[in-house]
Image 1 (cartoon, rainbow, N blue to C red):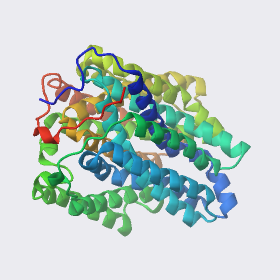
Image 2 (cartoon, rainbow, N blue to C red):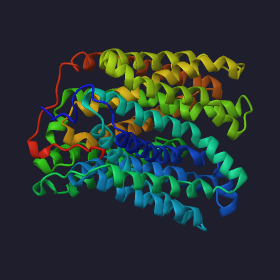
Image 3 (cartoon, rainbow, N blue to C red):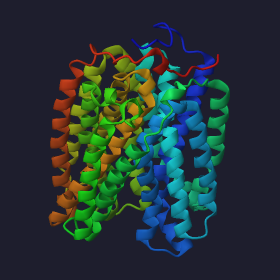
Image 4 (cartoon, one colour):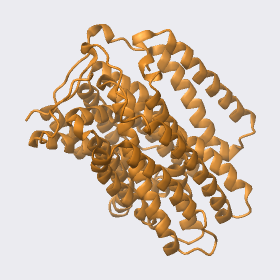
Length: 479
């Protein structure tokens, strides 16, 4: 059995709380950078003399690199130390945040943003592993609630913070603001989190696995991103899908021959609870990403909101998401995985179904109940499913598990957006297309709910397959 960090019911020390604040700040800057620039794109276009298509890659490039490297980032954190990978990733993130704010051309800005994605991909799984390691095992649910709650807060605040900085100063300050926050998180982590390392024999990097997985994910995500613009039936997109399929299937065979040095070791692949958690995240993520894309479009194109107003329009969903994520941690510890995760899944389906009744005559006020229900579902589901997935594996796999789950969220969202875009494009009006797409998403959520029920049924009785004692490592706070 994995060795406990502390006795059940042990109080969290002051030093641990300070370390958790540092983890929260790290998550906040990463999540904030996904959404803060959305309202600054017109200013970037004007200042750098570029087109919307090029400027959009300032956001897409960051997300693409982050999504592709999140799993290798998790594996590196588990092998070489989560604190070390966090410090390296945070340094890269901060340096290229500064560089992004200084870049004179859109091409250089996109390159700097991609390198920020490298830093974020190293930081995120390391933060997740350190957070679960900092807390006693009987408070594991709080770790998922903290990370996803702060992520939701960062996503919600992003458009507002980006709008204020852009209007009052310049879009460049969206990047500059990362520097003091990241520096504080690094200082506290250095002082309050101790490092543990795996045996030297394990310090082998699966370069072949990283290359094959990266190729497959890049091809898939680019195809899904470009497909709506140039057509999914075009030769370029079909080739990208074929490359993605071959690479991702090949990845499974490559990993079988790598043993303990595999990017995704066999004990991870064979764990049924973890596999089911990933499948549920894949299905559910289509809902969240679809809401984030199409609700602002409805607000702007049908209701006549400004860009900043559209960001504010999402606050009932994103704010409730953040608050519910924090509450979900305590509920998880009190009620267990079955009730909390299943409740989140079915609430997601209900929220999307309620929103699917929107039409061209809908007012914003009529959408608020659906937004709130959806926010509750997102908050309950993602924080709890992350905890179930991470704790299904040995503690030495925490960062890798968190990276894989987040990759499934990005991949599921990308596939869902591709499906929803095709549905919206096939309808006569935007409101009609969004309505149909949201009903399809609600149906997918019901399927995800059934998957959740099956895997949650044994979650409380299953335990991680223990590794050797040398494989186990957790981070502790220096009291």
